[in-house]
Length: 299
Image (cartoon, rainbow, N blue to C red; front, top):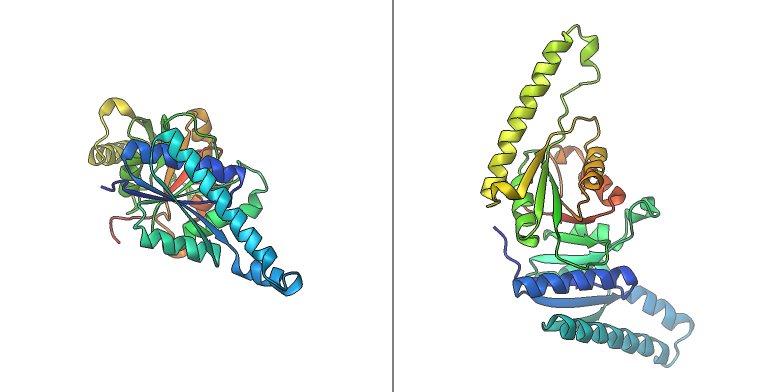
């Protein structure tokens, strides 16, 4: 079971980053965790500026000083509002590499970053700093979309019973200890769309699907018990569909969830690239905050 002792926020000083910092401060106060804000300034961009404009170093120094001042102001505001101590680090270099380095140095239990809203230039989300952090880090990453006004109250945890599922439920229970939880397993029979053409009777297919749902409900109960969720704090869903990511986004909206916690990969991780395809699509399409759990049982 993870604990929240050290939180690191990746901030580019934008409005989405401010929302992420607010959410991180809420979590830090609730868990008595340390909080570090990190703003990484591109070293290559500064070099380019020096090449064209900056003969005496004044422009680049002004940019560095302004960034430090703005980040420190944010840290001071958060500290005063939430009555916590907040560190502020402005560093120069490759953003993802530097944030990962600080996360390692601070032994971060959670890295928090802002991101764009659902569907907004979603094809450009892939390759964004938030998504690249998820690829790079072996630590959980929380991508904040919504302006936080209260603790998380309704959390959706999609599970496929791979090694990523148990840690995802446990992580959700730690990050949102007062929330209600919806555990979801998308029921999908292998080659389901072709089964009607194999000569198998429809009643047999229905029986298999029902048995699959029954088994999924039992296994979700085991995951909830392992994470310490009381019976009255979680519900199980077994929607049918050929695309789990569509089902996840639909259930997020149906149950008005403000957080989705999902594993970095699924059962077919070896067949996919750095992020599982379902996780990638959920990041791009959902309107809730998304926490990508990076721990698995069989690691």
